[in-house]
Structures are given as structure tokens and as C-alpha cells.
Length: 245
Ligand code: SAH
Image (cartoon, rainbow, N blue to C red):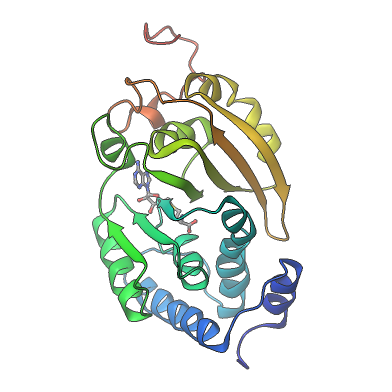
């Protein structure tokens, strides 16, 4: 496709990926829908199409090799917002089932329209909070081979939202920036409490992917109630809450 920037194609070959024309077409249509909707709601700060291809689409696709290597069949995108990284991943991995989780109703409605607008039959959208669907007894708990997330919050917050949804032995793939290493220093306690460990950190052309494995069941008192993970991240509070262990 002629209007796909050169840098995007270069990035794809660095990932050793090739996309069919039909897939590029659907990704381009998705960017059209995103920019159209962005005129009436805040989905992205990016205004230029070329930048969208690289900072949104390519950045999302950096997860493809890791998801493929994991053999995942069920992936949840936590806090999908305007659809990243979940929708580009769904376009390029049609055999994987994706759930896009988004707590803001109007964004969730955009995701539904965008997914059907670009014929993603392997995508479902859920307008709910991670703290609710992660509760013990909920069908989504311990259910996903892989949870992906970008720009949802600091590592201890993201871990509490994500790890209850991952099955034991499954992965969280978090797209972070250059300072991922520093962020991880604050996450030691949360990793421990949530029975998880960082097994890899990979620099990509657009960021850093942090790979977290769930080693064992999430303790039943996590996640805490909505808002609490962000208000008082695990291990980041000097006051005693009487709940730590
Ligand atoms: N992943 C997208 C959007 C990032 S903004 C991107 O990288 O472009 C973070 C999004 O997460 C927001 O849309 C917000 O509504 C959603 N979110 C934040 N906390 C959440 C929670 N607890 N459960 C579900 N969604 C959440």
C-alpha cells in the first residue's frame, strides 16, 4: 500500500514480519476510524498518520513474536483505549482470540465499532474494570494465556490489575518506555505478592517489552477493590495497611 510509511515497513522487517495487503488495508482503515473518532473523544495525542503507523501500529506489533512463541490462544488487552496494542495484534493473528478490556464506556463503544468496521471476528470488547473481572470466582480470572498492556499505569499497579487474569504459567507482556528497568525496581514487592517474576526485558525500535510470568495462583485478596491498586500500589506505601505479607 502506497500510503504506508517506509519506516513502518522497515520496522516490520526488523520483527521478521510480513503483512498481506489485506492486513495492511485493514490496519489503515483502523487508523482512519481512530482519527475520525479522535475528533470527538480523546483516544490519542497523535495527529499525523505516519506517526500513527509507527508509534501505535508498529509499537503494538512488537508483541507478535512473543505471543506467537508462547502459543497463546486467548489474549486480553488490558486498558485498550483506542485499541492498542489489541486491535493491530488481532488483525495480524486471526487464530488468536482477543478480549479488549476498557473501563471507559465511550472508548469501549469505539472499540466495538472499530473491530466490526475492520472485520475482526476474533475480537470481543468488554466495558468493565480489571479489578471487577479479576475477582475470585469470575470467569475471567486465571483465564488468559497472555495479558498485554500499554500505558495503563506504573508496574505495581499494572501487576495487580493484570496478574489475576493470567493463568498460572501464562504471561503479562507490558509495553514500557526506556525507563522500564527503573520502574521494575519499585515492583519487587508486587511481583512477590502476586506470585510472579520478570523473565525478560526486550528493547524494541519503539520501547521496551517487559515479560512477566505468573508462577502460582494469585492470593484471593487480590485484586483489591476498584481504584485501590492505583491509590495505594503494592509495595509503594510507607504506611502500614495491615494487609501486606
Ligand atoms: N492501551 C492504550 C490506552 C492507554 S490509556 C494505548 O496504549 O494507547 C489507559 C486506558 O486504560 C484508558 O483508556 C483507561 O480507561 C483504561 N483503564 C485504566 N484503568 C483500568 C482498569 N482498572 N480496568 C480497565 N481499564 C482501565
